[in-house]
Amino acid sequence: MEFNVLSNDRSKGGIYIIRNLINDKIYIGGSVNFKRRYNEHHRDLLQGKHTNPKLQRSINKYGLENFTFSIVEVCCEDDIIKREEFWINELAVIDNGYNILATARGINKEARAKIAATMKLKPGFFTGKKHTAEANLQNSLKHKGIKPSPETVKKIVDTRKRNGYRHSEATRKKLADRRTGHPFILSEDDIKRRAATFKNTWAEKRILVNELCINCNNTFQKRAMYKNKKVCPRCKKLQ
Ligand SMILES: [Zn+2]
Image (cartoon, rainbow, N blue to C red):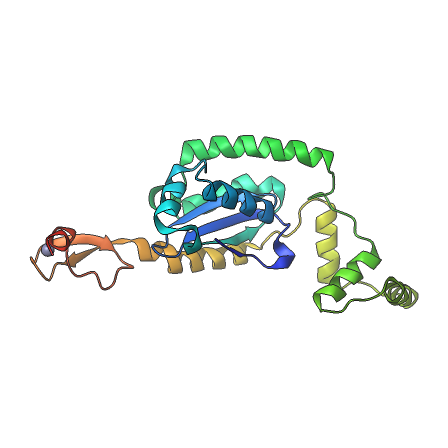
């Protein structure tokens, strides 16, 4: 299962999607840490012990390599349940995908309680882990492929302080949001745009349409995504 998440987002939380590349079926989940959740899914699915039987059966059938894990939306811990419900409804994954309403909720609640308990022992995950100016700069340089010595970093930070360096408005807002525990929230426009993209690439393809069988001339139903399916299931069986 490909972990389709940028390194910057790996330890963030929010809503993720597991997608079957063969039939486009999806699973929507929420977690406070994408990387950790991915590892749990991967381990359980490999061992055949995943708590979601629909997903496990499909993995057994299609193979783990035909699934991807990617982010739908990064959001703060408090919003995860709400946003997960939004996406599950928006993409109709209970009917068409791998999500199972009652059980999934129960498991998630339990898992969340556990996570919440862990979080209390480690304050600062979502509530604003405090990076020093040095650590921030070091990180940003590392991402650009530069490995600075601590002395260099200190020099740059000192210079910035001397010159009254300030973060940009956007960065300052981000930092403020992080301190208040509401980081990484997407704008309504962003959410709508993402919803539209998912609808186009997934939900609309799965709509049931009528097709005329070229063999027996009877009408049958198929998913819109199977453009080349021109023979009804009954005739297909006889072929
Ligand atoms: Zn037919």
